[in-house]
Image (cartoon, rainbow, N blue to C red; front, side):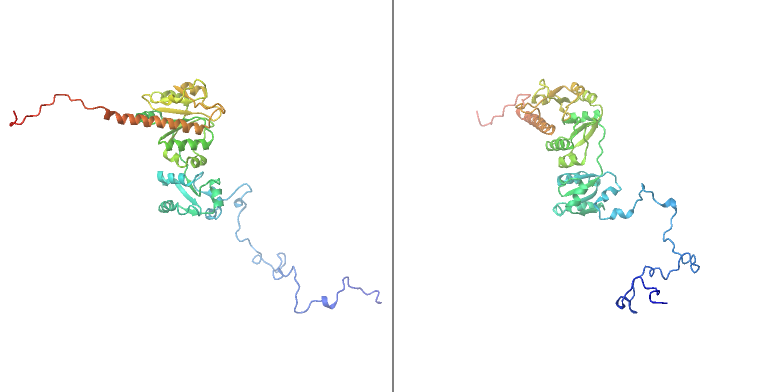
Length: 362
């Protein structure tokens, strides 16, 4: 055989490329080299790897199915609010609103969150939460924004049970009217900020009763309404009215029912003067106002006259002006009632006896 016929290596290498005896090269087969193949005669059922937690096909979750996990409740993620056992908790934000809630009914508060700035101010709230064995946490401002859903959280958020709004009964109005308490009725106020502002004004003037209609656009006691009310909603009794025009006709037995209207035939502030009955003030939707049927059920209508450059005020501003006038009338009536006994001097019912003369005098 000649050198030409001898087979030559395809990839010749030098001595430097040859591995030394104390040097090993990585091999893909080394990892499983000590483990017999599943199909080899040396392997048996004992040597074959078995699943650590075998489960049947029925136990496998589907793609559209999720399994509850208990460990998620204690995770550090702020999204744990969605896993709260109490569904749809109200998020009451702001120190004044949270403080009013704790004073009215602390049992409604399920969890309390606050940031570093308000840590000292909420110390009393934390003590109450500890007595009730309920959690309270110091969190970062970014997490507080996620919990409250707004950047206007005021540094403290109370996750509380939502407040129920009972149905209004006309018989209740009889007792309110005897005490001289006015009533405000909202019909279709769709912006929760306006509802909260009106509730704040009511509480400021010491008025207790707020009725909201079953109008499809009427806002409820949302988180935004509580935040804007600054605790005012906690000082009010709120009821739901069904069939407002009919209720207005029934209220006229105990109240002077006055609605707001842009009609030029509407009266001024004099419409808010009480007769023998206190005033029930109706405020309508921000765009369309009160319905024609509801206006027909009112005894009188009132308008705030301006310079004419704009058509009207915001409904919360309108409410503030009218409620101030109602409060002023109420104070004037109370002052007049207090002054009446002082003006009436007692009239003698019999002639006074003459004083007896001294015996030494003639």
